[in-house]
Image (cartoon, rainbow, N blue to C red):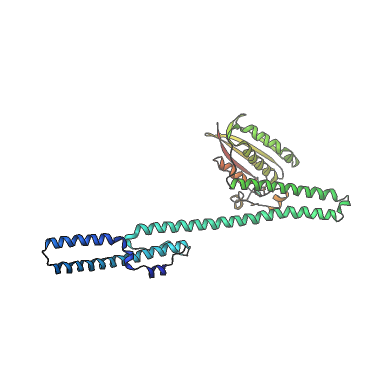
Length: 350
Ligand code: ADP
């Protein structure tokens, strides 16, 4: 309900602004009056006259107090109203009488919080719109491609032995991309809505790295890339969610393969204080400095075509970052164009 200040002005008299002081003013005046008539011996007409004077004085006093309060209350009401309807104003526009400094500061604080909340909401709304735009765009590409291959096959290519198997294989590849994208989207929405629960326990990090590496060996063999390991010792237990960390290793190792033409990948573990630092080094394409700070953003790709061709969703590193941070750690990256990249993070040791 909006406060109509003009209406308020019309309805409320100065007396109603000072009504909280009625009792005090009349009480005090009555007290002074009795002191007065007890001190001086007054005739009945003088008593009546002084009573009339007291009443007049009280009324005048109430009027003046009300007038003063009215200005202050109207100013406060107007500021609250402006904050409420979010009218453009700066904190410096909130100026009350010096004796209302505390209320002035409180209103300034409320105004600032209100402005912060509004700009956060605007950022969130923009992020959501951008995200939905990106998702639709990412979904459209594989769906259109699959549709295209199927249409071509239906229009005759199915009987052409030179292309039919190739087209079907390409369509299947895009269904895999679609599936990967949907899985990553589910993960990212679970993470961001706070539904991804961590189930930490102590486990052998060496074994986890070895099994993630085995999972990806057929991919690295295809490109003649060797995955080497250098472990601090054979059985080191760390604290974390094993399944989520497997996802981290699979993402980082498969990126190292995807973005390398040849060469080696090295996975190193080392003890630093109470932690185990894990690094995944590749000798691939490398990442330019301008892109380094952005590769953890959702859908950010340095080379779109290469990423899509390799089945990348553009969400892998965003998921990795979330998972690593949920382990109280930070993902670090160093890279040099043409020389390769190193991604590293630490986990608590047993
Ligand atoms: P994608 O699914 O595209 O691989 P990611 O979120 O995993 O998405 O990575 C984001 C981008 O960061 C990639 O598109 C790629 O350009 C770059 N990138 C990630 N890892 C590496 C790497 N090891 N070497 C070079 N570039 C990389």
